[in-house]
Image (spheres, rainbow, N blue to C red):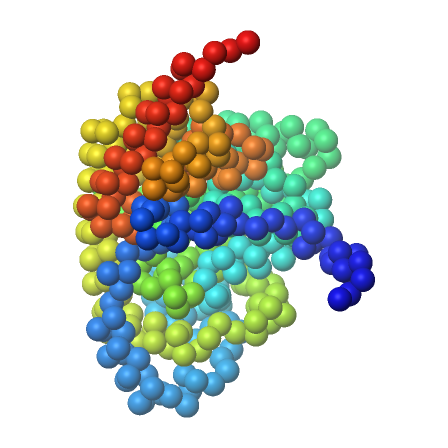
Length: 410
């Protein structure tokens, strides 16, 4: 055994923490527990038949290419097809503006690797995606939070935060935001708010990291222009992924940005994994080429619309009156708020006893707030299990409310 092993570890790894969500998932593997904790797509919607067809064709016709090392930038056909999809949506980019990554989580990690020095500052929403917070902190970032309202990150508080930091001589490296169906809240940002935030970023010369993993899973409301499309100064970096509309197991993601920034992503990725697996990239490209992706998006969106509507109906029917929640127009999650006197982290064990699980909301707050909140996933379970899970959760919450109200204070 190595003596004093702890002394060998880097400052980076010592500052990293296990993902609260991944640790919770370990506790919810018992088959009797209904879990709303993971951000998992519905596996019954995976296009296995079409994938079997495309995979066989790729192996037969392009096996020597698809099974070889690929370029760091990504499969040329996949990049071409993705650029065409962006161009059809009104975003004027070229292939030089796009790199394929090993899922969008790698895009977050590379963003931190490229921009963050130890003790640099990053601005995020309160709350924000836990995976992003973990990636930024792992490179030594200090994270400053800006509260959300029903339209997403508040632009007035964002500017106030920037001014507060400037008075301390701090210039934030970037603003991290998820404008469409934000994780964990499910809130979507209207175009006018996106424009306000871009204007603030231009005014104070700050980069924007726009995370867009759920954008195509819209089942209500009107699609808004992305911040990438609204950007006129080349300061928006957008992260995309197929994990929510295709198959998460392929781990296909991408980054879109100005050419100078993409060049840095190429250099950083070469030091990380050289290239994203060429085989799954070429299968994904042929899948798109055959028109299967758009068909699959339509299937996924329709299914999640039904699940969300049923989920909301069940919340309305079973939840105690002091509990509130968001109603997202897309994505995979909603955010539930308990009475202020209930700590969701402490309440978690009570929920497990009722055989239901969630993610305590404080995990998504960089400042430790949100103790009376929780994130719920409605995409993974079927309608029956979603309803039964909400019944169990509502029962557990009702018991907790009763216990708190009857506990004497001294």
